[in-house]
Every structure is written in C-alpha cells, then in structure tokens.
Image (cartoon, rainbow, N blue to C red; front, top):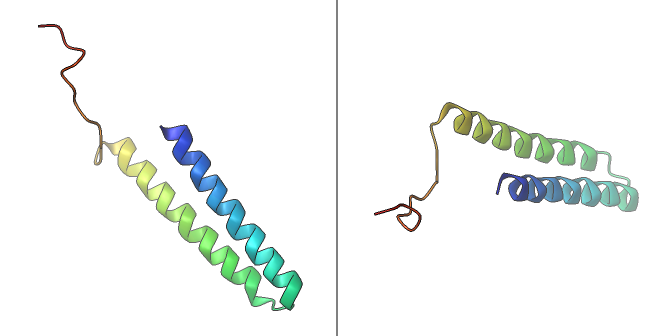
Amino acid sequence: MADANCSRVCLWLSWVLLLTSVGYELTGISGMDAVGAIIIAIFSFREDRESFEKARGETCHCETRDDFTEK
C-alpha cells in the first residue's frame, strides 16, 4: 500500500513539473517555474509530515479483522 501511495505522489509531482514546464515554454512567464516549485514543496511537506506521523505511531488506519484469528 505504501508503494502505491508513493507512486501516486510521484505521478502528481511529475504532472506538476510537466504542466509548469510546458506553461513556461508556451507563455514565457518565468513565474510558472516558481508556482511549480511551490506546489512541489507543498506536496513534499505534506508527505514528509504524514511519514513522520506514521513513524511515531500517531496515525494508523489499519483495520483489525477477525477472519484470520483462530477460535
């Protein structure tokens, strides 16, 4: 599950980089690079914060199931 989340985040980061780079090439607005960098920084910050919370055990969305327990 963690690999799937990582792949999804990497996909979003790639899209942001691609769109802002294409936007810069088409318009020549240098601020497009800055916008892309800010969006990538926000994604990175959110993912890092979530990783640290999980490492500390603050959040766990694990479901306990009785299907595999012996009775």
